[in-house]
Length: 181
Image (tube, rainbow, N blue to C red):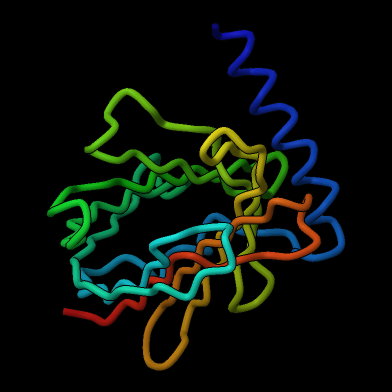
C-alpha cells in the first residue's frame, strides 16, 4: 500500500514539475499567508459535473486558516452548509516542498473520513496559484485543477475544475469567494 501511495505522489509531482516549469514561477513558503484569517465563504457549486450542465446552486460557509510545520504548511478548517449534503466540515492540508518549490494540497472531507486522495501540486505566479493532479470521478480518469486568486473582488477566490480530455478543456464546478469576518 505505501509503495502505491509513493508511486502516485511521485508521478503526480513529476507531472506537475514539468507542467509548472513554464507556467508557474518558483513558489515560496509564504504563498498562502494571505489566507491566515477567519472567513465567511460564499460557495457556488455545479450540481451535475462533466455533462455540460448549468445547474449551479449557492450556499454559505466559514473557514479559518493557520500556519503549521513552522510556516512550511497550513491547515484550513471549513464549515460547509451545502443544501444537498447538509452541514459538514472539511479540511485543506497544504505542505510546501522546499526542495522542489511546489505546494501539495490534500482535501479531507468529514463525509468520507477514510479517503484523502492524491494532492494537487503546483504553485503561484504573482497573485494566481495553479494546482493540478490526476483523479477519478465516478469511475472516469480525469484531471483536477485548483486555481487560487489572492484578491478577486475584494477577497481570495478558489476555483475547482475537472477535465476529462487530459487538460485540453476544463469545466469549473465549484467556486469559493472569501470575505473576512
